[in-house]
Length: 367
Image 1: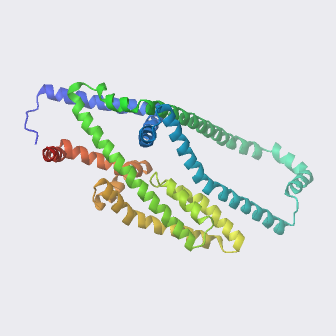
Image 2: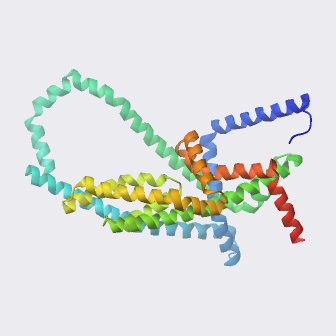
Image 3: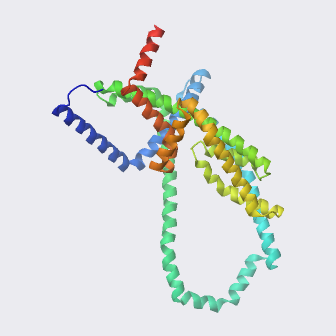
């Protein structure tokens, strides 16, 4: 319990800390587009640093610059290898789907050359098309469509900006890796000396929990990929192994694998057109695989693996996912586990002092 009396000076100090916290949050929100590439670069540098360190000190590459380049080449080669397992077969399947669609149109309409048929139809109905383009209905439709066109243009610009931000993040990452040891050892100097122990211990807790989270989520994603490969193979789904690998990679960011339903629907359409089966039956079987694997992951794998990695009870894990998901939606599901663990670590270290007692006991035993 807090036994000291709350004086006016203490109240003013707390009020100042509160206002400072609010100001920092507002500033971060305002500079979010600028800080996001830098934060992403720090995360990438944190993930790549062990490999850079291994290349430099274990493989005796003297230059840090050369070590970073070798690491990036290895990582890019691994990503290209995974893409080679997924993208060419998927392109082949989509080309096959295009051929099936063309054959279906030919058999249904008895048209051999679709562009030529479109040109002939345009020439035949030229007067009707001109009358329609002069009508009010066409002008009203054009006015309604223009905002959507500008929206697409704006989205294209956003994509280009995102690509530029990615390049900036890679540049940040490169310079962070060049001086990683210096930056990680001296960042604490931005705080006053009396506050450094607090931020140092908090940073250690955050690094430990982040490391545990990455290892745990990587294992969950691997298990999910294997389960999807098995499930799609059982129902004889096209690209079963490649699609399972893709879903496992997407799940490195929790729940991002749900976007794989889009290529799954296209592949179900391909199988239905190729085998003559009902599309909805094929797609329902694929969705059933999604549902079964998701239930296994949420109720068995995630509580066990993440609970063991992050030392949280499975009930607490499920509760944290529900609460953060309700507060922040999809983003809340992504940050739920690390945020909950970090809050509990802070509570145990600075409120109940449990971590401090454990640290003291460890130091005594080591002596």
